Image (cartoon, rainbow, N blue to C red):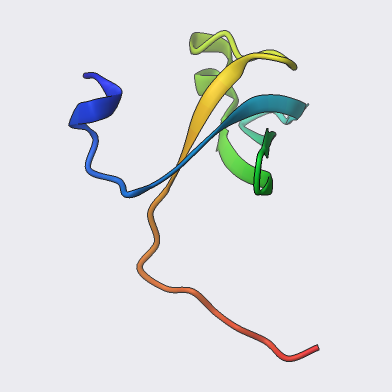
Length: 71
């Protein structure tokens, strides 16, 4: 599957800034031009994709709901 074949409109190019690995899930922070995008993915996926700090990636954001709160 290529990036062009994925039907997600919100794509952010960036580099991995930090990975916090857990036994099952990991938190991956991606530094983009617009700021940091954080993803929670399986630790297995982190290993299979060979993700490391500094790796250039594309963060795909697809959401059915966006919540807003006042400050």
